[in-house]
Every structure is written in structure tokens, then in C-alpha cells.
Length: 426
Image (cartoon, rainbow, N blue to C red; front, side, top):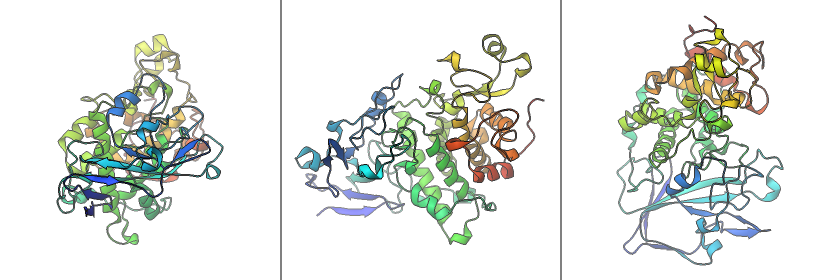
């Protein structure tokens, strides 16, 4: 009989006995329904990152669900990656430590016909390890080798949480926590139909909604949540660290979260989990990777800059724009997309998470650790000229309506805790 237990946060582990374990069935079993394989079981494999981050929008392989997630921007199903005995017809023998992730799929009639819905209900990890974890260990980073916990609960400095006043616009912290705990990264609807799934970082398309949800959880973590009882802010912090350590493993494995920034807001938002985890734990490696001057791999940094003479000479910027903090669709790879047009495609996608991320960095004292002033200056330039003035669109024309409108909670936390004082034009 294998010894089983749970890490802090509720994530299960199994200590492998000598000779390993044989898995003969998983509930629900992976089955094929009308030529769609459902309820897949995957082994976390970070080598998929280098294969799944091409220089174009090529398919990303996964063994979770055969619906391929969307009519375009496919996350392609590969049956070789689904190791569920229900799909393979053979038992699964595990002799070495690994992490398995089980998907529970939605039935076809539960999925919206639009491209903004997801094909899976949730994904749950289980860690098969060869040692007894230290008391109060967080789960190991997904895909790490060896599969050993990086942190214990006491490594997190909960005293850094400022316990600011909770605004009336805040969502239910308990509801956010319920979504936040799963390593499927909150499964916010998005155009790829996937999730911000850090075991593979498979959500490389339109992660902005998931990034906004992460920012929401971290903003709540920084509020006084005493009305919810004790410990909820600490649980949010624990899950934030778990997500951040997974982003670190993906980055170390070769993920470049700026590769397709020419396509808009697709990858922006992955940096905040790493930064928050580094700040809360004091982990020097995390803080190093979150520093844009040391690792220039983050879309939110690559896409924010100050307008130079070269931009004036080559794009539609004007001499009066020199020095203006700006967001560009792709400053390097796709010059035709760079325009001062405030309604430029994808600019509004960036709005979904950037103000919340900036507020979190300020609340946790992480602006200097982020080390990219144009990001914060662009947020400040646009925030007080857009939806913060009470309308979705201002005379400056920044469109912040529809599915990409920032939340009122982000607005209230930003205006309350990000110091005003920078403005444009000077």
C-alpha cells in the first residue's frame, strides 16, 4: 500500500513504493465520445515548452482533451501524450517520481459555440514522489527535477501583506480562492479555449484574462480580509507562490513569454506570479528572473517603452510624443503593427491585467524589483485618461469596453494605492 498525503494547499502526493506503482484505472476514465477523446491524463513534461513555443502560431501539443480547444490558435491533441489507461488500453506503470495531471472535460452540450469557452472543467495534479515531504511543504514546482518542494509555509513572509481597506467593488475573496487553488490557473474563458496551464504553460494565447484573475487574487491578498475569518489572505499568498514557482520552472526550461508579442496581448501577464512569489519568499533566483534587465523574456516589458526619434521617423508618432511611455504591439518583429492609434488592435487586451499588476507591485514594494519603468509609466499615462474617468472611452480614444474591460476592483485598488504624480504630456 502506497503512503499518501497532501501538501499545503491540498495538493495530493503518493510516495512511490519500491518497484513503483501500476495505475489500472482513473476516475473518470478517458473515453472517446463522437471522435473526441475526453478526460485525458498527462505526465508533466517541460520539454514540451521548447517544442510548443515556436516563432509562429503553430499548434501546441497536449493530451488533455481531443477537442483541440478552438477553431483556431489550436492547442493540438496528441494521443501519445494521454497516458490514461482508458485511452491506451494498458495499465500505466510509474517507477520514477513524476507529476500526473488529470483533466475532467466538459460534455459537448456544456461548451459554448463561441471561441471564448473552454473544453475542460478542471485539471488536477497528483505528485508521485520518492521521499516523505517536510511538514508544511508546498507542492514541488511542476516539471522540476528532482521533484522536491522548493518552499515550506514558513518561507512565506505573510507580514508583507499590507491589509489595506477592502473596497466595495471587490469580488468575493472566497470565490476567488476557490478558483485560484487549482494549478489549471483559474481557467478563465479565453479565445484559445485552453487555460493558463503552467505544467506545460500551454495557455500561451490570450492569457490576459487569467493574468487579470491572478492580479485580482493578489490584490485581495493585500486587503484586510478579516470579515472572511482568519487565514484566507495567507491561502491566497500560498497559491500565488505555487503559481510563481511554476512560471519559474517554465522560464528556466526555455519559455520566452515574448516570442509572439507581435500578435498583441497573447503572452502578457506571466511575470507577475514570478515577481509576487519572489517578493513573498525572498527567493533570489525568482527575483533575478523577474528583473527585466537580467531576463528580457516578458511581453509586458518588451511591449512597453518610451517613444524615441526612431519611432517618430519610422511610424506615425509625432515629435511631441518623444519620451512618451507607450505600448507597441511588437517593437522588433512586426513594425507595421506599431502605431500611436489609441484604439490599436490588442491594446485593450493589455488593459485587462496591467493596472491590477501595477497595483500589486506597488502594494508589495516590488516596483524596483520589476525593474522596467516604462510599464508603470504607461499604466499611469493611460489609467487616469481611460476608464478611471468614469467612461469606457475618452477623448484619447483608448477602448476599454467589451470582454477586455478592466475590473472596477482593479480601478479602485490602482487609484487608491498607486501614487499619482506622473502625467503626459508634461
